[in-house]
Length: 324
Image (cartoon, rainbow, N blue to C red; front, side):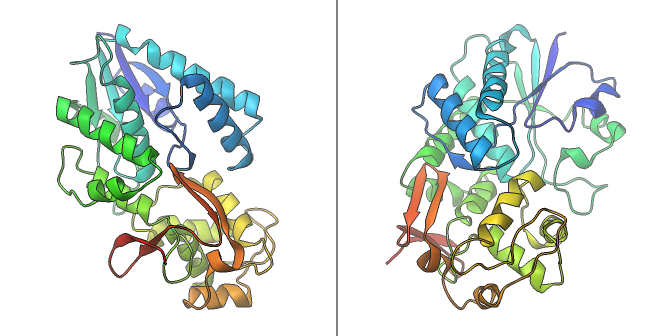
């Protein structure tokens, strides 16, 4: 049997090679939970726009040309997966994984020769890991023990993933919020992941995303560098961590910019950084980052621009609301 392991990163490549769960490995690592996306883009536009964002918006990811080549290679590899007898999709519960899973299942749902081959392996916990964040925490023998728990991707899962992908790409997030309210669907971790996405909209309280607010809290808790703040975010603060460290460093930099920075200057992940007086007020719910600085950010298909944005996250209601 020809088997392919498809994963949204490279973290399992070596570990799986140490098991008897043989197969080729395909990394699909375009972090569609960040930056601009559009369900109507063709592949050429997709590669160009995403490469531009990943090079500039996340920083340190290489030149647009190099990233574009990587994205094209992933797309080309995806076109060839029908040759396999079995494709194992390794996607845990968090927003990073679930967004990519929706992107892939939406793209593959009408592909000839794939129905009956795609197997989904998805977890939100593991008995050996007190705070389960992802498959990368598991040792080879623990990964091997999961064999047999993968399940064939069903038609209703393809359909839900497609609906979620279209909603993620839309410029109006209301359909996305409806999907986030539908707990217990055919993709059981999707609703929680979509809620975590909605929490990245600016809060009614202070204009910060949940990630931004939690990073300020980490400094209140005693962090002295971005590395320490990120470690707190992942280890305890974030209810559903989904960002890797390289995806977080631009957030520290952004919070240290503008006429009223919330953090002192960003000089690197391991260099000293602290809350400013303004950052302390923001953390206390006094002030508003959006009104003071404006936004130039894409959350899925929603473009947030300027000092008056149409959508805010209401933490008390647990919902996205239309801003005044």
